[in-house]
Length: 167
Image 1 (cartoon, rainbow, N blue to C red):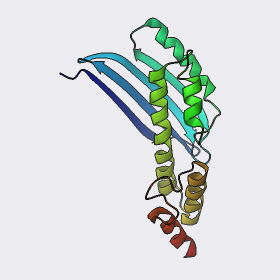
Image 2: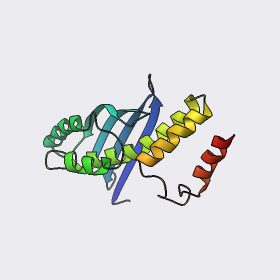
Image 3: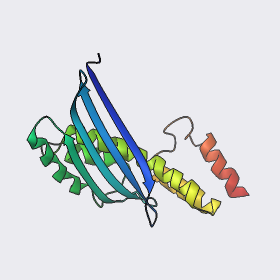
């Protein structure tokens, strides 16, 4: 039997008006018994990464006081998922007013929001030039350029954008 297991699941759905909704769940088990089950929902505007709505639920926690950490979520509303988001989450949600487990879930959701926004742009924007311009803007704002082998300045992603821009 497993001593400890953490699973984090994040799904992304489309909302109206260029907004995506992230539905996240963190579940911790110790020797098969659930000790944490936390859910968070976050709506993020695709064009600039602004968090327009955020809420959460503590479905299973070891202590009643844990649910008080949900009040810290309001500190993220109006902020953007971009460099500094992780620090913002750790300082506000992973603080002595919040919950490190909730912070872990929100950090994963921030990463997934970038993937969800990119998928939205590719699927919903009809003008390829507009899509490429948005993708480049987001990549620059999130410091994705040169962050891995595929996102390097002379790598396949940037090369594809440049090829489409010359068409």
